[in-house]
Length: 521
Image 1 (cartoon, rainbow, N blue to C red):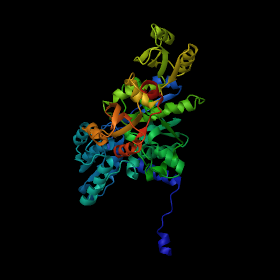
Image 2 (image 1 turned 30 degrees about the horizontal axis):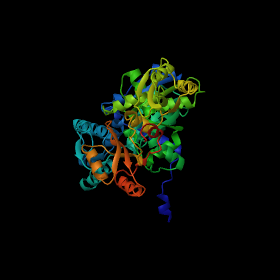
Image 3 (image 1 turned 120 degrees about the vertical axis):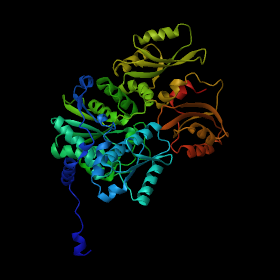
Image 4 (image 1 turned 45 degrees about the vertical axis):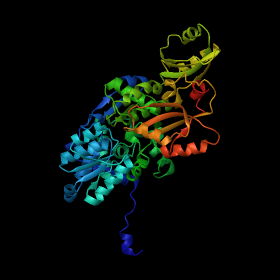
């Protein structure tokens, strides 16, 4: 390499240089042409429970009910005249689509949003209402994104990424600036993580100005791409991601976002879906706002962090409520799971004697606890298996209850963490077949859209006998089936091959304790 070539090589920026450069972009970002300075609200009920002052940064107050408007507008503001005249394009079925549509409308720029054909009409209508031109293409995000890239290449549109772009990151980082202006003596800020645009921007701003404040990233256990990247030292692809918190269902952290996050994030906390549901309830109880699952993620992580660090003295913590664009039908699922996530409900399988008065004796043993569920069907003349849901005052009550049941001679098992029990078996208790079957049980998923169930059954074909079938639509992006099949020794391999063509992530759950208790002959 000659001297001229060497002189053109830009040295890699240090962590401090990265943060200072991002801070400069954040301070110059003109997001308030369209975005609001959102409030930082106290959560008195949750604060009393946790022993810390809990504050909630209300990005649900934005015109599009999420923070995405900030980054989208900042990106558009930096376009050249030629790029503005040509228009922009993006692929999204969520908050990025609505944020970009409104930002483009305010900036006077044409915006084409490619959305999967499976996108609910309410989201399509919202994007059109903000002035975006919707193109429906493909039945998945990957196909929509590929089409958006093709449109950009063919028509000269500028792609507006949802997170992995410095201008987008800087726009989201204005939240950090507001936090410091509203409460400069914070001890920690909890931030939801999807592709990393929000945490990269906010963390860079806060660490540049107030490095003593801890930055805690929060991810779903089934979509922890930042945690995986930190462990590997670079962004990596997750094999699969859960879709309940769809706003953060990202398989790979962004390159630019990771460059900042690896220097600015102090810790990452992961939470499960039940904990997210409980956090949605916490937000509602203190503010009467209903957060989307990704929006409540940071608060769920704060609660987990408080449990893990119970030795900490009272501190001042802030969590970012990133959005409130929730599918209304999802509330049914949330209401069922929030008590479990809080440890305020337990579901148990209990064996009691099959005789007169046995139910009454069992209920008396439970005392004054509220019974949320009680399912039973005669299975033999000697004993009965009961599926019971109980509301607990505190999670610690479960251990005491278990001791009481054991002392009274009741065989029982805690099913509160058994997904098969919580998703399906609780609605199917009593389905023991009249004779022993060579039966195996499977969880199968498929994309939810009109006619999806018929397509699933058609692909399954008629080669095997279905012995158990349970399907519930919670309004989520994925349909879930609990499937029992009569399979001979020679049928297993061919059936597995068939399932793989329907759902590459299918799994066998024949060993589920809930299934063995209630449905196995």
